[in-house]
Amino acid sequence: MSGHASEHELADLAASARAAMVRAVEASGAFAADPRWREAFGAVPRHLFVPYYYVSGVGGFERRWGESPDPRTRERWVRGAYEDTPLATRLRDGELLSSSSQPSLMALMLAELRVEDGDRVLEIGAGTGYNAALLSYRLGDDHVTTVDLDPEITESARRHLAAAGYHPTVVTGDGARGVPERAPFDRIVATCRLASVPRAWIAQCRTGALILTPLATGLVALTVRDQEHAEGRFLHTPAYFVPLRGGSLPEPEAVALGGLPRRAGESDLFLFLLALTRGTLDPREAYALWEREGMPDRRRYGITVGAEHAWAWLDEPEGPYAWPLPRASGARLVEP
Image (tube, one colour):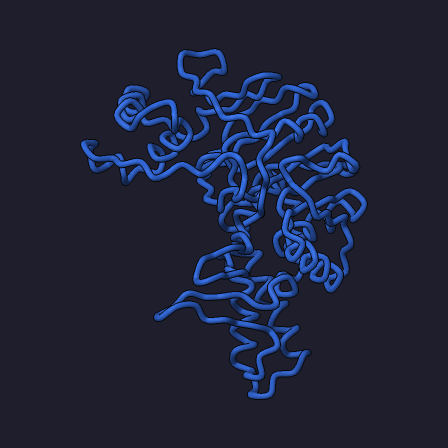
């Protein structure tokens, strides 16, 4: 690229980088459950949703932005926007407040939603608007609703979406309460970690709808049986999202693993069990169960939400291993 990069040259670079990103996401297997998402990722320009972002480096974060007077910085901005990596988009006093998720994880979650033409989707956490744009490309603007508590986030998401030519419904509000005026939904997808599943989501779904949400350090896919009940298992993949903030369910403090074998602290699967059963099993009890059951992966675990109680379980909802989840009806949800 020349020292005086034109808009045309940046557009060509973006198209090339986007094609490379799609190939990388496809190679990761993220599209396997629904290969039709490949077209959406190839069409929606991610760089329009991250007009600036931060890259960690020696001495702190480097800000990359598309309006930089330096053509080399603009080129790095475009290339970075299409790397298969999460991008930090909001910082405060050095603390990460918001990010654009890793494209391969976004692709996996969208594929696992298993949407059909005509489905109505609610996204919890508007973020940059990129995920809502992918959904709008696939299903049409009228079938997509995205909600976030932070008006600054929803306003910027609207701008990004409009710049890319998409106009789904963007709502400023408490995501834990859903968006009843847009219900019923066929799919709900969340992009921040919860301690439990808000019952408002279930009540706003059609029978047979799917809810996909981060919980502990995994992703659970729940099938809605009726307006009070949902149940499903975790996917195999790990997923680390910023937790809800400012709600009635505070994030637990770190648990000391002193006295346990070293591999306990090094095993992602044990730490998942520990996060899922926190408040019910202490680390020694969790480790004994984990060893006794052959170090189970995430797919052996599931969640059941009933009219009065919600619980996590291993292998079977009514089996010998079940742990209560906190109620989430009053939580305030903030997208990372």
